[in-house]
Length: 275
Image 1 (cartoon, helix red, strand yellow):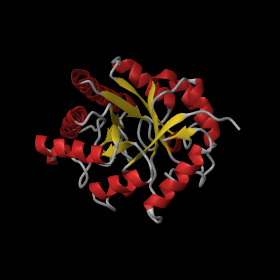
Image 2 (image 1 turned 90 degrees about the horizontal axis):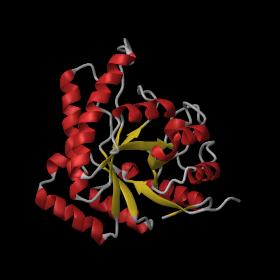
Image 3 (image 1 turned 45 degrees about the vertical axis):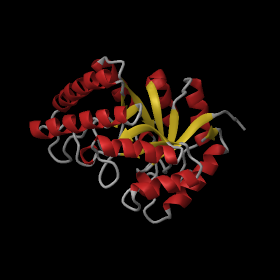
């Protein structure tokens, strides 16, 4: 079996809305993780709720559990850089700037960004929403540069950037060293062959999300519950000399969140990842 070492972390997504932030960090620490991606949305850690004192307290809380935040992720149910509505785009840009400030304040390296979506019915022309999103990313990229933070753009099914080649094009057009790629196994495999997507993004990839599904219906299942071959993913990441963190990002609403993270961790450790 192909064995190597890739750094493994976990997102707080699977514990969001089930536990308080403090409880979530306690659970994750007990699972023996040291690196996390923090979902920065209410009720856990929304920037608007965190003044300087509370940010200092958050740093202390993370330190008390021996946890490092690699990335922030505000979630993207209602944020949309590609919206035809200027007010929605402006709100999204300002939200992302607030995320970038929070990342700087708690020593997180990356803010994960999904560029946005069109409408399910009557989708605007792709050129229009592409340019809307690009303008917003360029503005956020300059802000990120000034704050020492990286924007990690992510493909997502049912959005307008769904494939690696589209993501690579956007990053190239934005043209900022502060904009890199986030690769997501469960997002990618329902739209294109997963190994070729990794190759396409190559050294643009700064961060990885790990979850399983059957590569037909999108989902963020525990590792081993779908058809993705994670040993092959590990080998592909090594081939592009990926040295970032891969985080387990699951949504298991009908299972105990600790259990599905724990089994995923065990299965990933067997093919080369290590916390």
